[in-house]
Image (cartoon, rainbow, N blue to C red; front, top):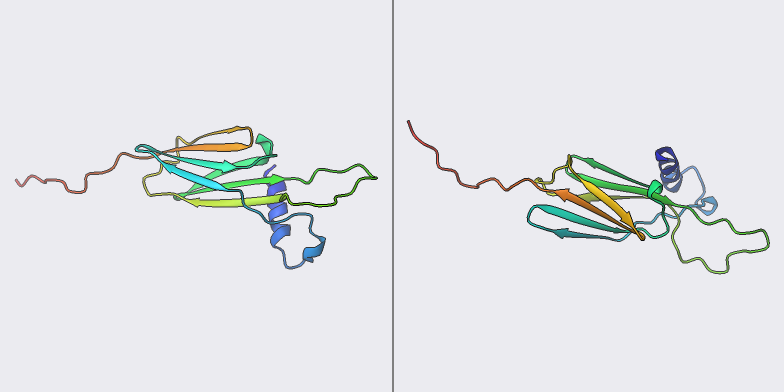
Length: 133
């Protein structure tokens, strides 16, 4: 699965393959981010994908959402008259605040909506009294 997404991403950005021959279109799903006191909620709109077509990665304060939506194959006599949907691989990077914790991220995918809950560390006291001995 991961190699299929990377292959499509490489093809979509390659200078060696004429863009007219590509079967993928670079696209990015819409993302909403909500802040709660102790967590962040990232909501990603990705209709038409299966759960196995999605990957999430957390690294150094950044959430990376990757996936692929393949163009459906049409029976031989049928051809597309109009195509407005985006197909192909995507990679979306979401920068996160320093207090985001990658250890306990939870994600659910229902009805084309991916919801990612990212816990946040408790805020540190900005001023701290230090005892003098």
